[in-house]
Length: 236
Image (cartoon, rainbow, N blue to C red; front, side):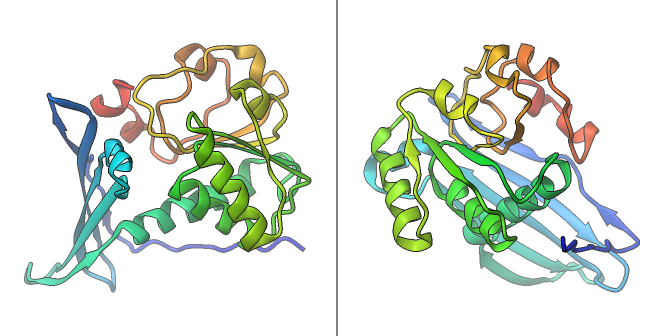
């Protein structure tokens, strides 16, 4: 029997647009400020300040880091300052797994394709497995094949799952019914509409992979239309 978790939001929530700090000399890097407020009986405000510096990986540093500041909404006083990269990754992965349950025609089964095999992909897979998904096949593709091979080893050692590392993006996409995009690309590259003729469910977490013509040829589901049409997201 399928299990559904229902989340009830407070009576008053405020979620302004995100603000992006970008660097003219480092176009791949950014830091994002994400403020929010929960009202009702909670009465807490906060902000997540999260950076993405993909070039860190060349120095064996984490791509993303984050801090979360929580404030009392009555006095404005800060209550906590928390390292939040794990919180952010968990929130992203959990929401992706929940979305997959509700929008997949046949949830909890099929073939999984993972494009970009970093921390977000790993955390999302853990949530899918936690929600009792059973995949008959897993396809991996990463521009850095070594990363995909490490991911395959992790799946085998930690979850006793076999994955095929694909040499071409096309193979990973066309053979999968559920596809996760979790890359650090700045420029869209998936332009062939024929690759999704089999109507897979795509969880597009990295936002910049799919070209406009493919997006327009698809059924798109978002949680906040206005947010998705802000300047920063339109520019992708």
